Length: 504
Image (cartoon, rainbow, N blue to C red):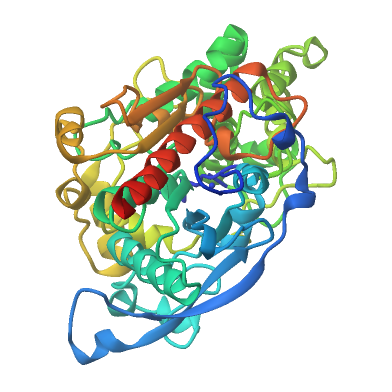
């Protein structure tokens, strides 16, 4: 599927710390474990109030229309904040391409560490998503044409976050409270870029599963699907071969008399619509998103899924009860992703609903977020293909009347020779990547400096570190979170020491 609404989310936790502050910040945490008072707090911590900020439409021009405003939603939890008088920290989640409540509810890490560190939590919704819609909140108007959608960009979003954070701190009389930003997937990209662009607003960033190098010629267009291939092949050679071979079988069957009806029955497709392409896209989506969310515990981030869903898919394919019926085997795998609850009676290939409000991503993918992911070599689990920028450009011209700007992200934020460049001027960024996540191929996988660090988890999936913790979490995941808390703790300790040094 050439133009996917890929969830850069993030988020996880779809993909976002501090002890009571007296005269000094507490000592660093052990790298291997979170403190006992943070363990297994559960979702009873999840609570927030909804607020709105009057945001300017265009931060970068002074034309009269630039001064239009809209209401930007942000969610706030001050239950554990020890207040501005103690310069208690503020943790901000840089919102993704969707409804901010969805990401907030899946970002347990921030909620779980907030009580220990007495932190204020703020989750800011990205412009043009959720309820943060310009033009009077009218989504139909805001999405109506390229002139209105032209205000949807990452640079405008980052400026929104900076403006809102500064105003919030002023209103709370918390100008000396340090801000740490968190984000997963596209939100993780924004968190990293925010630290680079607005270092006077935030002291550091946790950027989880942030593919900031998935642009231009920095990352191979084969990387994304190669990782998915290895996820399934590593689980079962037979599973890999069955999926790799299914596309030709579907194509051949669709060409025969009664072939589409056979496919409908084999995959339990509803009677309203079926085509070869829609069925193949439906299946590929299941494999892509299952690889992304191959979490070690059950999740409901995208769809209800069991722990290690790739393993469960391959179990269905390898089940001897299905004999040599390849369609039945692959149906069983797809059923893990689309119907783990068992509630569906058939699958609707003509369902274009958007429950999380992700529709604006198509515009972003047609302007600056040109991230090559559709290349498939001979070993790929998907049919052989080449990344074709011209195909993307034609799609964007047809749908929006615009041409993408594939070099803008690397021009604005960098990416080429990132190790050499960021070592000179960047600091205080954590890049987490799980190597089972197809987006990890475009992530920062090596330390850049002592304070720009890469945390890698061989068994990790998309922003798994930001998810709610569970007693079933493997030890490696506990270690990842412990190390992240330890690093952020050091950032804050240095910040508070700088305040003391400034006074004396």
